[in-house]
Image (tube, rainbow, N blue to C red; front, side, top):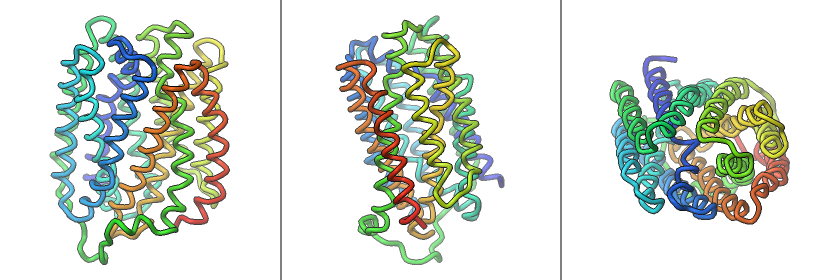
Length: 374
């Protein structure tokens, strides 16, 4: 945890605090602005699609250009996106802001590449899961604050507050040392490197596993409001519970060792339990436990990034991270659109589908990912 790793971790913590203000209640706001479940899923999928399309170019550039200016561009984009969302008058008016917000996430593989280089390529499972824990630690209190702001003032105030927190986060990024990719690490390959059989064998189980896990989340707030009658404030508080779960699980799963990638498998299993608890767990305690366990998804993403970091060699670290992040984003796009469609048919269907698909993802992960990963 040298100075640059600490500053980047602080920036991610503050970004998480900004995200938490609106993330868990945003589907309710889209619904309030006139969107139906399929439109909510489609809008969230569009945001994920923009993010996914940006990851590979961002990772490619991270291997060739100074990384600090690339990071600052994403932080500026995120702040502007929140200001744009605050001006929306209907759900279509949210589209520009959410697209900008999705684009700002292009920094994820660049952050990972910066951290991996700053840490000297050592103990990356712990570095990445610790950074994920910092992000979600920032979300522990802010969802409840966002719920209070939305109930007592307006959702516009929530987005304005998020813009301010993102700007504060950017001050930490401004303080990190510049970092250029090391030209002495070897030749940098072109994008065709991503089509080799070994790398495709790595990302295939990742795609299915994250598709299955992402089915659980986009419409949980709507399910709790529509079916169980929960208020926006209650759902905001549950977002804080989810952040606690992700923080703890990221730290714990990052320390699980084993040839069968046991941390990743355990994270999938916990999300499977979460899906069942959303449907059948009684009362506040049962639903709170479901939100605690959903943190397995974020922990799995950090573990996947750690494994991808050295997959194509240090010279192509950004490219590997960007392609892996694109795979996770593609799974999210497909899952959110599918969840919106299923919810329109029957509110319980997205969670039942997750219960069916997550075990298949676990089987594929255990059989293929270790065989093809470095």
